[in-house]
Amino acid sequence: MRIALLSDIHGNPMALDAVLADIQAQGEVDAYWVLGDMAALGYDPAGAIERIAALPNARFVRGNTDRYTVSSDLPFTVEYVLEHPRLLPRTLNLVRDMGWTQGMVTAAGKLQWLKDLPLEQRLTLPDGTRLLGVHAAPGTDDGDGIHPKQSDDELRAILAGCEADLIFVGHTHVALDRTVDTIRVVNLGSVSLPFTPDLRASYVLLDANTSGYQLEMRRVEYDREAVLAKIRESGRPAGEFISQMIRGETLSRWLQP
Amino acid sequence: MQIAILSDIHGNSLALDAVLADIQSRCTIDAYWVLGDMAALGYDPVGAVERITALPNARFVRGNTDRYVLADELPAILANARPEDPQQLKAMLESARSIAWAKGALTATGKLPWLAELPLEQRMTLPDGTRVLGVHAAPGTDDGPGIHPDLSDDELRALLAGSEADLVFVGHTHVALDRTVDNIRVVNLGSVSNPVTSDLRASYVLLQVDTSGYQLELRRVEYDREAVIAKIQQSAHPASNFLIRFMRGQQLRKPQN
Image 1: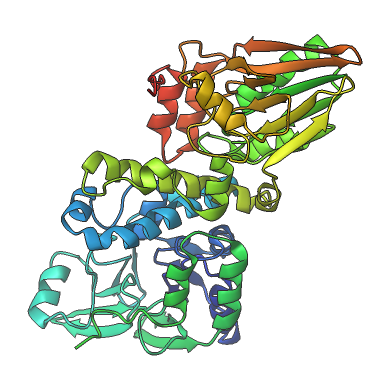
Image 2 (image 1 turned 180 degrees about the vertical axis):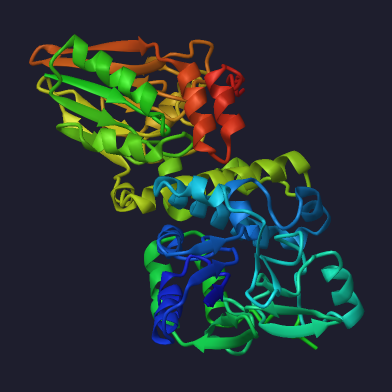
């Protein structure tokens, strides 16, 4: 069996279409796992949801920005913004993005779909490997996630009690493949909003049979200039905030020295 | 000739339907004037815009909240708020999200370009020579304090100076008013939705005109505010609690002087 795993589409159907075309070009897949952050921070939230909701044999999990879109949640509390006034412009960008995304998704009749996303997905592969898919880290759709600066001990603590042998996450937009003890954790990177010098979309193909499994991390080029044009055409609020990420001007803090 | 003049619909299709039913039950209408604040701060921005754009012989002007939706602006009172005050910060973030929500819904349904083309004012000369001006807040502006009951004659005279009109229709304050200073009569329509006076009904004006003069009738129309509250809750509007306060008469205007 073969599964395509992707995450962090962020309302970018052009990047998503490039990834889906690459998946098709690699041959048939039996299933898709889409690990959250479907709609927000992009030019076409509803278009992204329509595409993934139409995929055959697809499983989904909720990302933190999916939760921000359907609730009044933010990555930080109002009290935290009060203590850190420099966060105000970023907070205004975020609430405008979440409001716009919520309005778009509501008008397209997709809000309930977004609300119903589960926190995690689990599956046992033919060789007995227990698979867990979650947006940020076991048990959570938010926080620091699984990132390259974590020590083995820190990673061990995050994965403790997850009852899985192979864990797929997204959230940080930084691809990663590490094993501590007997648990392997793979960060898919992201379809959109790259936080690494490699601006291509990334996803993973998983081939599994009774004797084991194999992973392939794939990178897919897409037309980021066309995405920037779509952001401008959309008239969306916080457009420059999103465009900076598409242009690769937002390097992950986990990659900074 | 009869003209129905209304304003401040604020995405409340139930209240608008009640007003339109009242208009259509009473007489033959030759034209509609809709004086702004069409979409934002209500549960159904798209439905409100669809209804008014389907009216025959309709003229429109832009309200301040229509402009906020287009330009991602905040009301001045919030744009200049003190972000170190928790209540003001919360109100600022909620307002930004609420305005963006309306924009997302209008964008998803292709209504945003219509909103972008609304003019600041409408003018017409009646058969008896009366020069009519329709504008959202006051001559020359869609925002600010507007034409409200606490203005002295001198203040009102200053606001109307240079308006080049004999009969001025405004909305914006949600407080109906009919005053004459010198030779200029100014009529505030009140509002279709989001009442701030103890009379929670929708209000609008019927203008009846012939060659010998004109007559005005301020009409009040009851509608099911509990049904609106249910719609607000279903919509998951980002400022639901604030909108519901209007429907319950909990946002009553305080005198401004």
